[in-house]
Length: 132
Image (tube, rainbow, N blue to C red; front, side):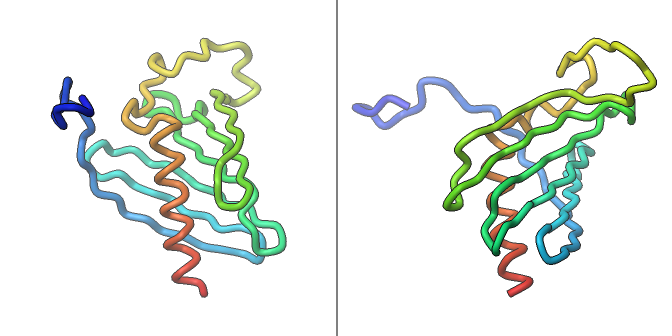
């Protein structure tokens, strides 16, 4: 966005999608499964807590072409802010070596790590409201 003119220099392309979320929780973990209806993407969120403080968020998206392959984001949290992240593709170990390519396995490009950071924290806030 140009600051001096207040207008867009390029149009952002972010598809609008609706999300259905189911969840469960235990003392130190919240589990949420988000189904993005338009893109037909399912992402599992696991929120890890220590002494009622959120310390880690794990997201898992299964590949639509190979259910044994998942894209994982691991976000480490302190004072409700993400301070470190790690992203990787995982597979069933019996398959041996595979091409670890985000696009090859057709993961949802709109749900990259920076988007999931914000979505994760918002889902967590809503879960905490429901539980408390």
